[in-house]
Image (cartoon, rainbow, N blue to C red):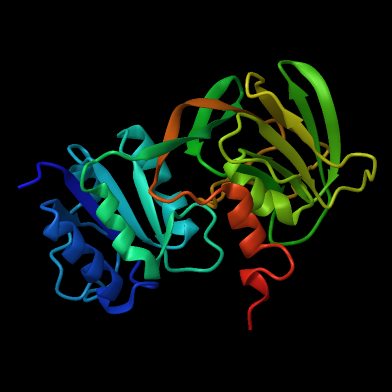
Length: 294
């Protein structure tokens, strides 16, 4: 019996009937691994995981050797913080759309047999520590793999932001907001807002404005040693929100300061194939690639 414990985290909205999870579990059991099924989300409706005995994820993470997710990149993002804090590597099986972070597609389950000897590569992906200072006190903190986004509320309006790096002025933004992303997050919201594509294992922070009125300011790619501070200016009572990896919105006030820096924690992603980031990007995003298929 293999002593390694692997957590299976299926997104029931993607893996209907747990078909792919069962197929992966069969392969893992044939190699002698211990497996346990956990829900990646809270408050799942009864029967969402078929007849599986679903265990509490935070408890099972304490002695896990690997977590395999079945869903899209959003499922990995949702679990990245917990995985990083527990130093558990993640292997993603893409059941969704583009899938830049997930390693395998659902039709590639046989590749899981490469786990047999537990000799595989791991990519360490940079993460962001995000905090909010209000009246001199830290009132919010979060950890993100993709990005920290500051933007206007449900009613569209121009917001004014001042960004500084290590206490020195960097940029003023008037527009819909700003995205501070990791290299992993550079192919997400930041790319849609016109930001650059950054190799995901790089160590940089990308500052990308959202629909800025200042056409001279596109985006910045910065060293991760910097500590960025975003301050709200002249916004009055207009609603402004902070999102970290698409988490629940945090409402900001006019005098709040949002601090963003590289975290000491990393997301460890298991690599079983020799797919390069450039190859994946070309297949899924460039003309003629998977994104153009009918």
